Image (cartoon, rainbow, N blue to C red; front, top):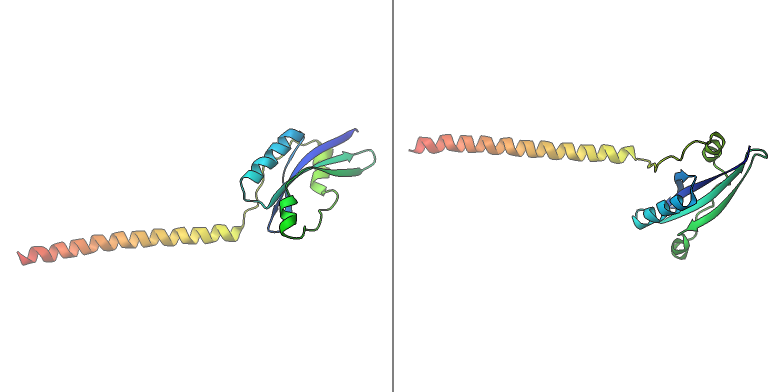
Length: 146
């Protein structure tokens, strides 16, 4: 087989790098990285060209876009990522299409939000029912006065 190339978009958040998405096209990967960097939710973004030679089983990674220069000035750089991720090598071998932007959700954050929303709805419901009851009770007493 021939040499296969894949462009990985990596994001830095909380001091750790994560693969956000992969693309077969360099320009699309760089545009995605610029868009993610513009959202200001990540400390840095970089695009890595991952070349895999199936004949020799070796891979090579080259950084083609990087926004970590500002991060390096603020804090020490995090440890570099391993040379080749198994998922990237498997995707290159199988020729799978690029996967979309994947975000890891924190389940604890989802549960906390659900509890807050539930408590707020119960509070609104109790307040509304209490107001209706008080208006009804006050109206009944008001009629007794006349």
